[in-house]
Picture 1: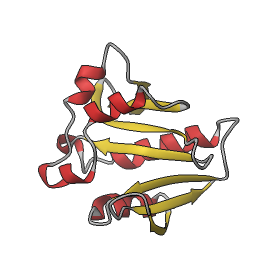
Picture 2: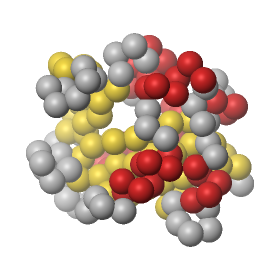
Picture 3: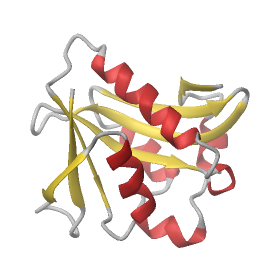
Picture 4: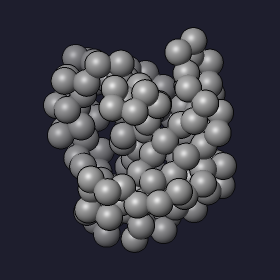
Length: 147
């Protein structure tokens, strides 16, 4: 059973130990970096993804002050826990959580490295549509989901 829990002083060290598969590490910032970045982002949540009592992933999402839309800034499942359906189920939870927020916008945005085919497939299956390339990043693809 997948559940989300805020990253806090009790679980952050466990969270920073989660790692993508070696061939995926260049696609995403480390959880340590993301947790540090989270300290300076208003209206964002840093969530540990659990399967029962086992932490299997990490997500960071919130209302971006630059464009006023909700964004998923980080999303990862530990390499040892991939291929078990956790990513798909946790993404569904996150989408529903954002859909139910009183300040939600009409779209949910995210970006990913276009070489990351596994992420692309997950996001397309969840209903995201690729809409272009982020001009301010190193060529990341941008995708949106109509809420």
